[in-house]
Image 1 (cartoon, rainbow, N blue to C red):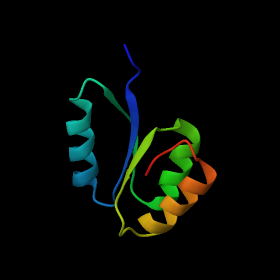
Image 2: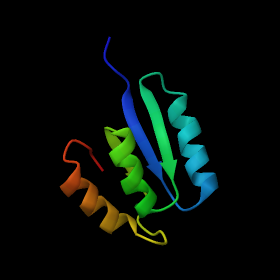
Image 3: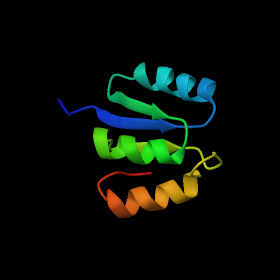
Image 4: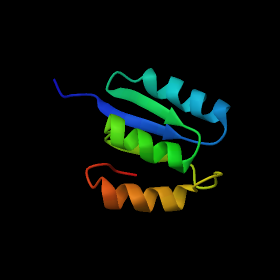
Length: 81
Protein backbone atom coordinates (compact mmCIF):
# COMPACT_ATOMS: atom_id res chain seq x y z
CA UNK A 1 0.00 0.00 0.00
CA UNK A 2 1.39 3.40 -0.97
CA UNK A 3 1.55 6.39 1.35
CA UNK A 4 -1.13 9.05 1.11
CA UNK A 5 -0.39 12.16 -0.94
CA UNK A 6 0.29 15.05 1.46
CA UNK A 7 -1.48 18.25 0.30
CA UNK A 8 -1.43 21.86 1.50
CA UNK A 9 -4.41 24.04 0.42
CA UNK A 10 -3.77 27.79 0.03
CA UNK A 11 -6.51 30.34 -0.67
CA UNK A 12 -7.41 33.69 0.86
CA UNK A 13 -11.10 32.74 1.04
CA UNK A 14 -11.79 30.50 4.00
CA UNK A 15 -14.87 28.89 2.42
CA UNK A 16 -12.74 27.79 -0.56
CA UNK A 17 -9.96 26.43 1.70
CA UNK A 18 -12.44 24.55 3.86
CA UNK A 19 -14.35 23.19 0.86
CA UNK A 20 -11.25 21.92 -0.91
CA UNK A 21 -9.85 20.42 2.28
CA UNK A 22 -13.14 18.63 2.95
CA UNK A 23 -13.35 17.21 -0.57
CA UNK A 24 -9.71 16.10 -0.51
CA UNK A 25 -10.10 14.50 2.92
CA UNK A 26 -12.84 12.29 1.46
CA UNK A 27 -10.27 10.72 -0.85
CA UNK A 28 -8.59 7.75 0.81
CA UNK A 29 -5.19 8.39 -0.69
CA UNK A 30 -4.95 12.12 0.13
CA UNK A 31 -3.99 13.68 3.46
CA UNK A 32 -4.53 17.44 3.86
CA UNK A 33 -1.61 18.52 6.06
CA UNK A 34 -2.76 22.12 6.42
CA UNK A 35 -4.39 25.21 4.99
CA UNK A 36 -3.06 28.74 4.59
CA UNK A 37 -4.69 32.10 3.85
CA UNK A 38 -1.79 33.67 1.94
CA UNK A 39 1.55 32.92 0.36
CA UNK A 40 3.55 33.85 3.45
CA UNK A 41 1.62 31.35 5.57
CA UNK A 42 2.06 28.78 2.80
CA UNK A 43 5.85 29.17 2.92
CA UNK A 44 5.84 28.61 6.69
CA UNK A 45 3.64 25.53 6.43
CA UNK A 46 5.61 24.01 3.57
CA UNK A 47 8.75 24.21 5.72
CA UNK A 48 6.97 22.69 8.73
CA UNK A 49 4.68 20.08 7.18
CA UNK A 50 6.60 19.07 4.02
CA UNK A 51 3.61 18.51 1.68
CA UNK A 52 4.00 16.63 -1.59
CA UNK A 53 1.67 19.08 -3.37
CA UNK A 54 0.49 22.65 -2.77
CA UNK A 55 -2.85 23.76 -4.27
CA UNK A 56 -2.28 27.50 -4.57
CA UNK A 57 -4.61 30.41 -5.33
CA UNK A 58 -2.85 32.98 -7.52
CA UNK A 59 -4.42 36.20 -6.21
CA UNK A 60 -3.94 36.64 -2.46
CA UNK A 61 -2.85 39.39 -0.06
CA UNK A 62 0.55 39.56 1.67
CA UNK A 63 2.35 37.28 -0.83
CA UNK A 64 0.53 36.23 -3.99
CA UNK A 65 0.44 32.69 -5.29
CA UNK A 66 2.86 33.30 -8.15
CA UNK A 67 5.61 34.63 -5.88
CA UNK A 68 4.94 31.98 -3.23
CA UNK A 69 5.06 29.22 -5.84
CA UNK A 70 8.41 30.49 -7.15
CA UNK A 71 9.88 30.43 -3.64
CA UNK A 72 8.45 27.00 -2.80
CA UNK A 73 9.84 25.49 -5.99
CA UNK A 74 13.26 27.07 -5.33
CA UNK A 75 13.44 26.30 -1.59
CA UNK A 76 11.57 22.96 -1.51
CA UNK A 77 12.22 21.15 -4.80
CA UNK A 78 10.44 18.02 -3.54
CA UNK A 79 7.14 19.87 -3.33
CA UNK A 80 4.98 20.27 -6.44
CA UNK A 81 2.83 23.37 -6.97
